[in-house]
Image (cartoon, rainbow, N blue to C red; front, side):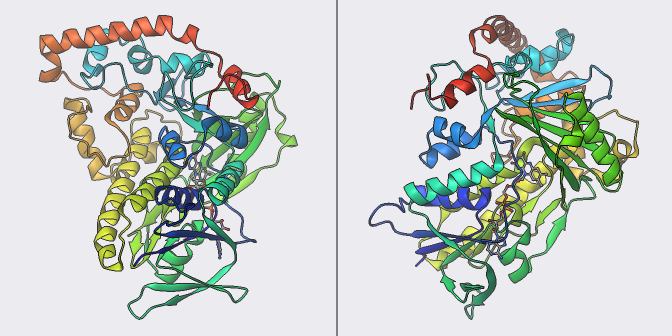
Length: 515
Ligand SMILES: Cc1cc2nc3c(=O)[nH]c(=O)nc-3n(C[C@H](O)[C@H](O)[C@H](O)COP(=O)(O)OP(=O)(O)OC[C@H]3O[C@@H](n4cnc5c(N)ncnc54)[C@H](O)[C@@H]3O)c2cc1C
């Protein structure tokens, strides 16, 4: 029987995975069918970056029984309503577009893309079909002051302090969800005759036995990589970014408005993220080491920080290197990898933590009671995860392929045909003739909804040719009605919602928010 789950690693991946499984199987209560133990190294730290999340995070936290206000206070979290891409299309001073989290108005009924292209191109796509771009511009919150925990007018994820997040989850998982916690350096693996892991060997001589081992050991990939030697598939031929340099920047004034989109500013050889937390911004430059040098990348980040009004000489910079890619398979024998141990592409669109949430939820839902059922679950898990990694590669590459920037080799190389996956070329051909819509073409396992493809395509000036379905008079009228509704909401709602900082400060002071 599968009774003892051992999670290796206490970063965000380890604690989210342990927490979702422990919450589902009520591990903190007598009679729970399984136990969850998380073991982490007392000497190896967590990666400590990763401050942007998806709207899925609200659901994940709720499933773990976490109150939104507690999370916001403990993790210095703010509301993320999407991403703003600055300088990605042409690099001109006014070049910016939004990929908001809320769906376009009426998206389940009709696509507004064709009608917008035909009649409303003077307004940027995101602003014509919804209110979230305007909310972000005005630095408004996605919900009113008196909204209950997790209730919202507009869809949102969070920005958060990665170090505080892991510590907060650890405390909650141990105290509330019955996750057993051990500090130990894992130095080896003892295997059964059939190749399954029997136990983990610790540096201090202890052994940690288990029935299922979840490798959340980050880039160390102790079990999936070092023990099972599952090949790592590099995606660097498609996604060139492989270095990061990060800093924390204080606001010029403590009451400076907080952005509620991740600002992604294109640079000569990558892009700069800028994430607004209550007391500071998290700022970093991710770049391709084949297209610039660490010194030039640092200089570009320093110049960006100087433009924010902070002297970069006063800051500490942290440098990280990574290989964009993922494992060939993720679940082998009685071991499954989640988080950086499974793979990492790049921070664009914050797709790493959502992959953790999806993988952890799937493990929790499909956990077999007996070993005999595990290989079938593993095969299914592997094919769904591989599909998701491929779809994320396509979606991220889309941002680079649609760019018209011609000012550096990085942007030109990104449009080289041999760097573009065939699957993306195929989709672009399809979308030339019909917009991405909720018509069942995209798989339910695609991490990005059709609306996300629309926001990037039409935000970046992609042209879809007139398509039959969008010319049916009834659908044209429906699209016009929803475009009119979006205009009305844009005129009315932003003024009714509080400033982002106002709401965050209220939550931090335990005011107004229920729950
Ligand atoms: C520059 C950058 C920016 C990013 N931005 C985002 C973002 O905006 N949004 C997003 O979703 N993701 C982002 N990510 C990814 C995100 O940071 C990670 O997916 C997330 O933090 C999960 O990491 P992890 O838990 O897998 O690994 P880690 O945090 O590295 O944790 C690894 C754990 O394994 C333990 N361990 C290692 N070796 C041993 C050993 N021998 N014995 C015992 N324990 C061991 C460590 O102690 C640690 O607890 C970013 C990543 C990078 C590099």
